[in-house]
Length: 345
Image (cartoon, rainbow, N blue to C red; front, side, top):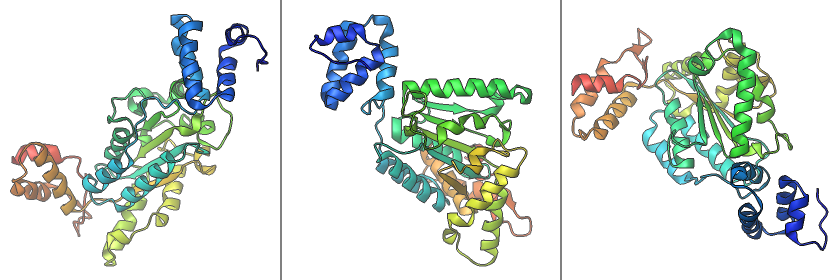
Protein backbone atom coordinates (compact mmCIF):
# COMPACT_ATOMS: atom_id res chain seq x y z
CA UNK A 1 0.00 0.00 0.00
CA UNK A 2 1.32 3.49 -0.82
CA UNK A 3 2.39 5.81 1.98
CA UNK A 4 0.62 9.17 1.90
CA UNK A 5 2.72 12.29 2.39
CA UNK A 6 2.53 16.00 1.80
CA UNK A 7 2.88 15.43 -1.93
CA UNK A 8 -0.12 16.41 -4.05
CA UNK A 9 -2.57 13.56 -4.60
CA UNK A 10 -1.74 13.51 -8.34
CA UNK A 11 1.86 12.61 -7.55
CA UNK A 12 0.59 9.79 -5.33
CA UNK A 13 -1.49 8.50 -8.25
CA UNK A 14 1.55 8.50 -10.51
CA UNK A 15 3.73 6.55 -8.10
CA UNK A 16 1.24 3.89 -6.99
CA UNK A 17 -0.67 1.09 -8.68
CA UNK A 18 -4.29 1.80 -9.63
CA UNK A 19 -5.67 -0.65 -7.07
CA UNK A 20 -3.53 0.88 -4.30
CA UNK A 21 -4.68 4.41 -5.11
CA UNK A 22 -8.34 3.43 -5.13
CA UNK A 23 -7.98 1.57 -1.84
CA UNK A 24 -6.26 4.63 -0.35
CA UNK A 25 -9.06 6.90 -1.51
CA UNK A 26 -11.67 4.63 0.05
CA UNK A 27 -9.82 4.53 3.34
CA UNK A 28 -9.36 8.32 3.53
CA UNK A 29 -12.81 9.42 2.42
CA UNK A 30 -16.48 8.89 2.98
CA UNK A 31 -18.22 6.74 0.38
CA UNK A 32 -19.70 9.72 -1.48
CA UNK A 33 -16.41 11.63 -1.54
CA UNK A 34 -14.51 8.50 -2.55
CA UNK A 35 -16.83 7.98 -5.49
CA UNK A 36 -16.37 11.60 -6.64
CA UNK A 37 -12.58 11.42 -6.36
CA UNK A 38 -12.58 8.11 -8.21
CA UNK A 39 -14.51 9.59 -11.12
CA UNK A 40 -12.05 12.49 -11.34
CA UNK A 41 -9.22 9.98 -11.20
CA UNK A 42 -10.69 8.12 -14.18
CA UNK A 43 -11.04 11.33 -16.16
CA UNK A 44 -7.65 12.87 -15.51
CA UNK A 45 -5.25 10.09 -14.62
CA UNK A 46 -5.99 7.13 -16.90
CA UNK A 47 -6.02 6.46 -20.64
CA UNK A 48 -9.46 5.91 -22.11
CA UNK A 49 -8.75 2.26 -22.89
CA UNK A 50 -8.17 1.30 -19.26
CA UNK A 51 -11.56 2.52 -18.03
CA UNK A 52 -13.17 -0.93 -17.83
CA UNK A 53 -10.18 -2.38 -15.99
CA UNK A 54 -10.24 0.46 -13.44
CA UNK A 55 -14.00 0.10 -13.01
CA UNK A 56 -13.55 -3.61 -12.31
CA UNK A 57 -10.93 -2.84 -9.66
CA UNK A 58 -13.21 -0.25 -8.08
CA UNK A 59 -16.14 -2.67 -8.08
CA UNK A 60 -14.02 -5.33 -6.43
CA UNK A 61 -13.04 -3.23 -3.41
CA UNK A 62 -15.86 -0.71 -3.03
CA UNK A 63 -19.13 -1.48 -1.28
CA UNK A 64 -20.92 1.17 -3.39
CA UNK A 65 -20.55 -0.48 -6.81
CA UNK A 66 -23.75 -2.44 -7.46
CA UNK A 67 -23.98 -2.66 -11.28
CA UNK A 68 -27.61 -2.06 -12.31
CA UNK A 69 -28.83 -3.57 -9.06
CA UNK A 70 -32.34 -2.27 -8.26
CA UNK A 71 -34.03 -4.89 -6.08
CA UNK A 72 -37.81 -4.93 -5.68
CA UNK A 73 -38.32 -7.43 -2.87
CA UNK A 74 -42.01 -6.68 -2.42
CA UNK A 75 -42.58 -7.12 -6.13
CA UNK A 76 -40.89 -10.51 -6.06
CA UNK A 77 -42.94 -11.61 -3.07
CA UNK A 78 -46.19 -10.53 -4.72
CA UNK A 79 -45.38 -12.22 -8.03
CA UNK A 80 -44.50 -15.48 -6.28
CA UNK A 81 -47.80 -15.57 -4.43
CA UNK A 82 -49.84 -14.43 -7.43
CA UNK A 83 -48.36 -16.47 -10.27
CA UNK A 84 -46.68 -19.53 -8.72
CA UNK A 85 -49.37 -22.15 -8.20
CA UNK A 86 -49.39 -24.98 -5.66
CA UNK A 87 -45.91 -24.24 -4.28
CA UNK A 88 -46.30 -22.87 -0.76
CA UNK A 89 -42.81 -24.05 0.25
CA UNK A 90 -41.10 -22.45 -2.73
CA UNK A 91 -43.03 -19.22 -2.17
CA UNK A 92 -42.03 -18.99 1.49
CA UNK A 93 -38.41 -20.17 1.14
CA UNK A 94 -37.52 -18.01 -1.85
CA UNK A 95 -39.23 -14.89 -0.46
CA UNK A 96 -37.50 -15.20 2.90
CA UNK A 97 -34.09 -16.23 1.59
CA UNK A 98 -33.87 -13.51 -1.06
CA UNK A 99 -35.19 -10.81 1.27
CA UNK A 100 -32.74 -11.67 4.06
CA UNK A 101 -29.84 -11.88 1.64
CA UNK A 102 -30.50 -8.62 -0.20
CA UNK A 103 -31.10 -6.66 3.00
CA UNK A 104 -27.65 -7.64 4.26
CA UNK A 105 -25.10 -5.20 2.85
CA UNK A 106 -22.22 -7.47 3.84
CA UNK A 107 -23.32 -11.13 3.65
CA UNK A 108 -20.87 -13.73 4.93
CA UNK A 109 -21.50 -16.03 1.96
CA UNK A 110 -23.41 -16.04 -1.36
CA UNK A 111 -27.03 -17.05 -1.60
CA UNK A 112 -27.15 -20.59 -3.04
CA UNK A 113 -30.58 -22.02 -3.87
CA UNK A 114 -31.18 -25.49 -5.28
CA UNK A 115 -34.61 -26.09 -6.89
CA UNK A 116 -35.90 -29.67 -7.05
CA UNK A 117 -39.09 -31.11 -8.49
CA UNK A 118 -40.78 -32.54 -11.54
CA UNK A 119 -40.87 -30.81 -14.92
CA UNK A 120 -43.42 -28.02 -15.25
CA UNK A 121 -43.75 -27.25 -11.54
CA UNK A 122 -42.34 -23.69 -11.69
CA UNK A 123 -38.58 -23.96 -11.10
CA UNK A 124 -37.53 -21.96 -14.17
CA UNK A 125 -40.39 -19.53 -13.61
CA UNK A 126 -39.08 -18.69 -10.13
CA UNK A 127 -35.50 -18.22 -11.34
CA UNK A 128 -36.73 -15.74 -13.97
CA UNK A 129 -38.77 -13.91 -11.31
CA UNK A 130 -35.65 -13.47 -9.18
CA UNK A 131 -33.79 -11.95 -12.13
CA UNK A 132 -36.71 -9.69 -13.00
CA UNK A 133 -37.03 -8.21 -9.52
CA UNK A 134 -33.32 -7.72 -8.97
CA UNK A 135 -32.32 -6.35 -12.37
CA UNK A 136 -35.67 -5.44 -13.92
CA UNK A 137 -35.41 -8.12 -16.60
CA UNK A 138 -35.87 -11.87 -16.53
CA UNK A 139 -32.79 -12.99 -18.47
CA UNK A 140 -31.75 -9.93 -20.46
CA UNK A 141 -29.37 -8.36 -17.95
CA UNK A 142 -25.61 -8.71 -18.59
CA UNK A 143 -25.30 -9.61 -14.91
CA UNK A 144 -27.54 -12.70 -15.13
CA UNK A 145 -25.74 -15.75 -16.50
CA UNK A 146 -27.49 -19.01 -17.41
CA UNK A 147 -25.76 -22.32 -18.08
CA UNK A 148 -27.42 -25.30 -19.78
CA UNK A 149 -25.40 -28.55 -19.65
CA UNK A 150 -26.54 -29.83 -23.04
CA UNK A 151 -25.25 -26.58 -24.55
CA UNK A 152 -22.27 -25.60 -22.39
CA UNK A 153 -21.07 -28.92 -20.90
CA UNK A 154 -22.22 -31.52 -23.38
CA UNK A 155 -19.18 -33.85 -23.51
CA UNK A 156 -18.46 -36.09 -20.51
CA UNK A 157 -14.79 -36.50 -21.48
CA UNK A 158 -14.08 -32.75 -21.25
CA UNK A 159 -14.75 -32.25 -17.53
CA UNK A 160 -11.34 -30.69 -16.80
CA UNK A 161 -11.70 -28.19 -19.63
CA UNK A 162 -15.22 -27.32 -18.50
CA UNK A 163 -13.98 -26.82 -14.93
CA UNK A 164 -11.28 -24.43 -16.10
CA UNK A 165 -13.63 -22.51 -18.38
CA UNK A 166 -16.34 -22.24 -15.73
CA UNK A 167 -13.92 -21.01 -13.09
CA UNK A 168 -12.56 -18.28 -15.34
CA UNK A 169 -16.04 -17.29 -16.49
CA UNK A 170 -17.45 -16.97 -12.97
CA UNK A 171 -14.42 -15.11 -11.62
CA UNK A 172 -14.44 -12.70 -14.55
CA UNK A 173 -18.11 -11.88 -14.10
CA UNK A 174 -17.76 -11.51 -10.34
CA UNK A 175 -14.95 -9.02 -10.90
CA UNK A 176 -17.17 -7.01 -13.23
CA UNK A 177 -20.20 -7.24 -10.93
CA UNK A 178 -20.26 -8.58 -7.38
CA UNK A 179 -24.07 -8.88 -7.59
CA UNK A 180 -23.98 -11.37 -10.45
CA UNK A 181 -26.63 -14.10 -10.68
CA UNK A 182 -25.60 -17.54 -11.98
CA UNK A 183 -28.34 -20.02 -13.00
CA UNK A 184 -27.46 -23.65 -13.72
CA UNK A 185 -30.39 -25.39 -15.42
CA UNK A 186 -30.90 -29.15 -15.87
CA UNK A 187 -28.37 -30.17 -13.22
CA UNK A 188 -29.41 -33.78 -13.86
CA UNK A 189 -27.54 -33.48 -17.18
CA UNK A 190 -24.41 -31.83 -15.78
CA UNK A 191 -21.30 -34.07 -15.93
CA UNK A 192 -20.32 -34.90 -12.32
CA UNK A 193 -17.28 -32.98 -11.14
CA UNK A 194 -17.78 -29.83 -13.21
CA UNK A 195 -19.77 -27.88 -10.65
CA UNK A 196 -17.32 -28.64 -7.82
CA UNK A 197 -14.94 -26.03 -9.22
CA UNK A 198 -17.33 -23.48 -7.69
CA UNK A 199 -16.81 -24.76 -4.15
CA UNK A 200 -14.43 -21.92 -3.11
CA UNK A 201 -16.95 -19.36 -4.38
CA UNK A 202 -19.84 -20.68 -2.29
CA UNK A 203 -18.44 -20.79 1.24
CA UNK A 204 -17.71 -18.13 3.90
CA UNK A 205 -14.21 -17.25 2.74
CA UNK A 206 -13.13 -13.65 3.31
CA UNK A 207 -10.52 -13.01 0.61
CA UNK A 208 -11.02 -14.52 -2.82
CA UNK A 209 -10.20 -13.34 -6.33
CA UNK A 210 -9.95 -9.69 -5.17
CA UNK A 211 -13.72 -9.27 -5.25
CA UNK A 212 -16.64 -9.36 -2.85
CA UNK A 213 -17.84 -12.67 -4.23
CA UNK A 214 -20.20 -13.10 -1.27
CA UNK A 215 -22.86 -10.86 -2.86
CA UNK A 216 -23.57 -13.26 -5.74
CA UNK A 217 -26.62 -15.49 -6.13
CA UNK A 218 -26.40 -19.06 -7.47
CA UNK A 219 -29.47 -21.05 -8.53
CA UNK A 220 -29.31 -24.75 -9.39
CA UNK A 221 -32.33 -26.34 -11.12
CA UNK A 222 -32.85 -30.09 -11.22
CA UNK A 223 -35.45 -32.84 -11.52
CA UNK A 224 -33.23 -35.07 -9.36
CA UNK A 225 -34.96 -35.38 -6.00
CA UNK A 226 -38.44 -35.27 -7.51
CA UNK A 227 -39.04 -38.85 -6.39
CA UNK A 228 -38.49 -37.78 -2.78
CA UNK A 229 -40.85 -34.82 -3.16
CA UNK A 230 -43.51 -36.77 -5.06
CA UNK A 231 -43.45 -39.67 -2.59
CA UNK A 232 -44.16 -37.42 0.36
CA UNK A 233 -46.84 -35.54 -1.57
CA UNK A 234 -48.57 -38.83 -2.43
CA UNK A 235 -48.33 -40.19 1.12
CA UNK A 236 -49.72 -36.94 2.50
CA UNK A 237 -52.60 -36.98 0.02
CA UNK A 238 -53.49 -40.59 0.79
CA UNK A 239 -53.40 -39.85 4.53
CA UNK A 240 -55.84 -36.98 4.05
CA UNK A 241 -53.22 -34.41 5.00
CA UNK A 242 -53.44 -30.97 3.42
CA UNK A 243 -50.53 -30.31 1.04
CA UNK A 244 -49.95 -26.90 2.65
CA UNK A 245 -49.03 -28.74 5.85
CA UNK A 246 -45.96 -30.30 4.22
CA UNK A 247 -42.86 -28.65 5.68
CA UNK A 248 -39.48 -28.10 3.97
CA UNK A 249 -37.59 -29.84 6.78
CA UNK A 250 -39.40 -33.06 5.88
CA UNK A 251 -37.73 -33.03 2.47
CA UNK A 252 -34.37 -31.26 2.62
CA UNK A 253 -32.27 -34.18 3.92
CA UNK A 254 -33.90 -36.60 1.48
CA UNK A 255 -33.25 -34.26 -1.46
CA UNK A 256 -29.62 -33.76 -0.42
CA UNK A 257 -29.09 -37.52 -0.23
CA UNK A 258 -30.79 -38.06 -3.58
CA UNK A 259 -28.65 -35.57 -5.51
CA UNK A 260 -25.43 -36.66 -3.78
CA UNK A 261 -25.93 -40.36 -4.56
CA UNK A 262 -27.45 -40.09 -8.05
CA UNK A 263 -24.80 -40.80 -10.70
CA UNK A 264 -26.76 -38.70 -13.18
CA UNK A 265 -26.68 -35.66 -10.93
CA UNK A 266 -24.20 -32.82 -11.32
CA UNK A 267 -23.91 -32.98 -7.52
CA UNK A 268 -22.89 -36.66 -7.51
CA UNK A 269 -20.43 -37.09 -4.61
CA UNK A 270 -19.98 -33.32 -4.58
CA UNK A 271 -18.25 -31.45 -1.77
CA UNK A 272 -20.79 -28.70 -2.28
CA UNK A 273 -23.26 -31.11 -0.65
CA UNK A 274 -20.99 -32.60 2.02
CA UNK A 275 -19.71 -29.14 3.04
CA UNK A 276 -23.33 -27.93 3.23
CA UNK A 277 -22.78 -24.99 0.89
CA UNK A 278 -26.38 -24.96 -0.38
CA UNK A 279 -28.24 -22.22 1.50
CA UNK A 280 -31.66 -23.83 0.95
CA UNK A 281 -33.01 -26.82 -0.94
CA UNK A 282 -36.33 -25.70 -2.43
CA UNK A 283 -38.89 -28.48 -3.06
CA UNK A 284 -41.49 -28.07 -5.84
CA UNK A 285 -44.54 -30.26 -5.30
CA UNK A 286 -46.35 -32.07 -8.14
CA UNK A 287 -49.33 -30.07 -9.38
CA UNK A 288 -53.00 -30.97 -9.08
CA UNK A 289 -55.60 -30.44 -11.80
CA UNK A 290 -56.75 -27.18 -10.23
CA UNK A 291 -53.22 -25.82 -10.50
CA UNK A 292 -53.01 -26.79 -14.17
CA UNK A 293 -56.29 -25.01 -14.84
CA UNK A 294 -54.96 -21.88 -13.15
CA UNK A 295 -51.92 -22.03 -15.43
CA UNK A 296 -54.27 -22.33 -18.40
CA UNK A 297 -56.33 -19.39 -17.16
CA UNK A 298 -53.20 -17.26 -16.85
CA UNK A 299 -52.17 -18.23 -20.39
CA UNK A 300 -55.62 -17.31 -21.68
CA UNK A 301 -55.51 -13.91 -19.96
CA UNK A 302 -52.14 -13.19 -21.53
CA UNK A 303 -53.84 -13.76 -24.89
CA UNK A 304 -56.80 -11.51 -24.02
CA UNK A 305 -59.16 -14.48 -23.52
CA UNK A 306 -59.75 -14.36 -19.75
CA UNK A 307 -63.44 -15.20 -20.14
CA UNK A 308 -62.75 -18.64 -21.65
CA UNK A 309 -63.06 -20.70 -18.47
CA UNK A 310 -64.29 -23.58 -20.65
CA UNK A 311 -60.88 -23.75 -22.34
CA UNK A 312 -59.07 -23.82 -18.99
CA UNK A 313 -61.27 -26.69 -17.86
CA UNK A 314 -60.68 -28.59 -21.11
CA UNK A 315 -56.92 -28.15 -20.76
CA UNK A 316 -57.06 -29.54 -17.22
CA UNK A 317 -59.05 -32.55 -18.43
CA UNK A 318 -56.66 -33.25 -21.30
CA UNK A 319 -53.59 -33.72 -19.12
CA UNK A 320 -52.16 -37.06 -17.96
CA UNK A 321 -52.25 -37.64 -14.22
CA UNK A 322 -50.45 -40.01 -11.85
CA UNK A 323 -50.56 -42.46 -10.20
CA UNK A 324 -52.68 -44.42 -12.65
CA UNK A 325 -55.11 -45.67 -10.04
CA UNK A 326 -55.65 -42.29 -8.38
CA UNK A 327 -55.01 -39.58 -10.99
CA UNK A 328 -53.78 -37.03 -8.45
CA UNK A 329 -50.83 -35.21 -10.01
CA UNK A 330 -50.17 -33.80 -13.48
CA UNK A 331 -47.30 -35.80 -14.99
CA UNK A 332 -46.02 -32.72 -16.88
CA UNK A 333 -47.14 -29.97 -14.52
CA UNK A 334 -47.93 -26.82 -16.50
CA UNK A 335 -45.28 -27.41 -19.14
CA UNK A 336 -47.71 -28.41 -21.92
CA UNK A 337 -50.36 -25.80 -21.08
CA UNK A 338 -49.58 -23.33 -23.93
CA UNK A 339 -49.82 -26.12 -26.53
CA UNK A 340 -53.07 -27.41 -25.04
CA UNK A 341 -54.54 -23.90 -25.01
CA UNK A 342 -53.74 -23.65 -28.73
CA UNK A 343 -55.60 -26.91 -29.24
CA UNK A 344 -58.81 -25.87 -27.47
CA UNK A 345 -58.95 -22.16 -28.16
